[in-house]
Length: 82
Image (cartoon, rainbow, N blue to C red; front, side, top):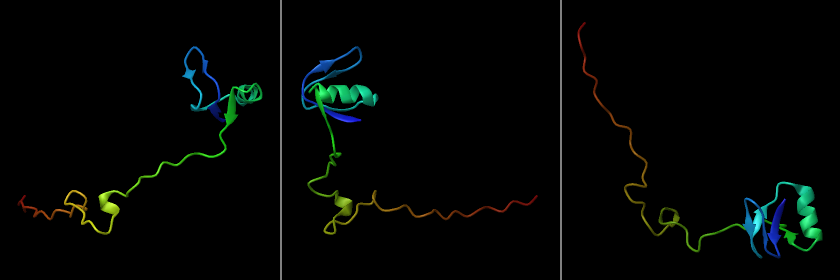
């Protein structure tokens, strides 16, 4: 269950402060933290978006040589008599 902490809490292998979001594996413990006022459930996942798309995705910019797909090489095979 995803939680957003309202208070500080620390354990043997973790330390969380108010505002931190974490995935709490044990749902019973998560519910106890919510009921005690230590945390609140996170209802939706935040999606990070860029302010501006990368250059390769913008129509006003030509892709650079490194962005273009490589053409397959045509090599001649030498014939050997055998």
